[in-house]
Amino acid sequence: MTQLNCRILLVDDYPAHRLLLRRILEEAGADVRTAEHGGVAVSLVFAAEGTERPYDLVITDLDMPVMGGNTMLVALRRLGYQGPVIAMSAYDGGDIAQLCLEKGFDAFVEKTFASERLVPAVSRVLKARRGRGGEEDADEPESPGTPPRR
Image 1 (tube, rainbow, N blue to C red):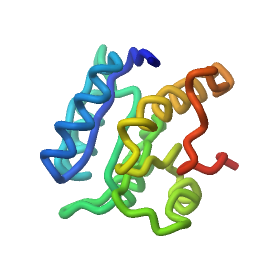
Image 2 (cartoon, rainbow, N blue to C red; image 1 turned 120 degrees about the horizontal axis):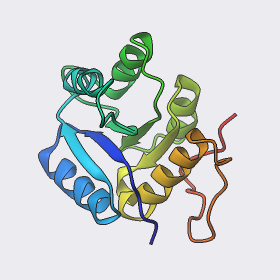
Image 3 (tube, rainbow, N blue to C red; image 1 turned 90 degrees about the horizontal axis):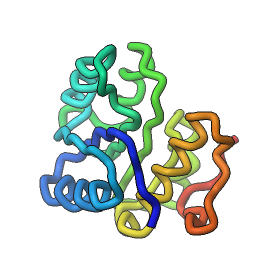
């Protein structure tokens, strides 16, 4: 199994989803903090910037009260955050993965397949952002839910 050595902010409005996804990521070696909506996430990201432990990556649900994932991404980028952001949703409306990439997310993972695809997606995105070429390891198959980034 892929081992993650990173700090992740996980944003989801459902406590049960946060708990499950946090466990999946922590079992893979990530240091995970959580937020219940995008407004809290924006505050946490910028509070951590300039410290010894900024977030390496943000994973967000798309549909949340107060501030959803799309609005959060826009706010983060306008405020200068350049780190990777992965979108998640329980809905697969067919083109949702492509739409997320077009909006500026680094990847999309369906919550239905999170236990299988989340850790490999995080690993790929971090490798690409860290300048390792984004090449996939043999044990990290391409997620069918995420089309190639253009």
